[in-house]
Image (cartoon, rainbow, N blue to C red; front, top):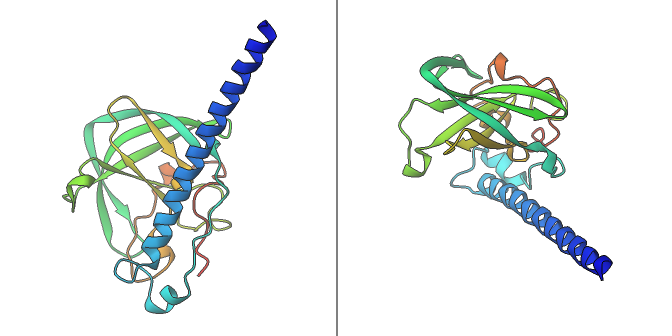
Length: 201
C-alpha cells in the first residue's frame, strides 16, 4: 500500500506543477495579447496610420519561466536623481529608487530600478517603478537601444522581475517619440531570450 500512496502523491504533485505552469503561461499570453491590443487601437497606439494598418502582432520569444526571477530589493536610502539620456536631445529626470540583485542564466546580476519624478497620471501608477535594461541580444534579436519592464513597489525586501514581460520603447516603432535609453550600469552581460523581440514593422 505504501507504493500506492507514494504514486498518488507523485501524481498530485505533478498535476499541481503542471497546473501552475499552465496558469503562468496564460498570464504571459494575456500580457502579450493586451500589448498587441494596445498597439492595434487607433485611439491609443503609438504607431503611424500607415504602420497601424499593417500591424498584426509583436514578435515574442517563447515563454520561459526561468526568466522570472526573485530579486533582492534594496531601497536607496538617500534619493539620487539622474538625468537619463533619451533617443532625442532631451534628458529625462528619474529618481534612482532601488538596487536589485538576482541570478539569471547561472550568473549574478545587479540593476538599478527607477521612479519617475513626474506626478502619476492615474492613482494606479502611484507605486509604479521603471526598469530599463540592455543585454547581449540587443541589435540582433531585440531592439538595439534596449527594453523596459514595469514594476510595482514591493511590500518587502524582495521583488519578482519577469523578463517575459519585457517590452520595447515607443521609439522602436517611430522616430516621433523620445525614449529613455537604459544607462550603462543597467547592461546585463547575458542574453535575455524572453519578452518582446525587435520590431517587425
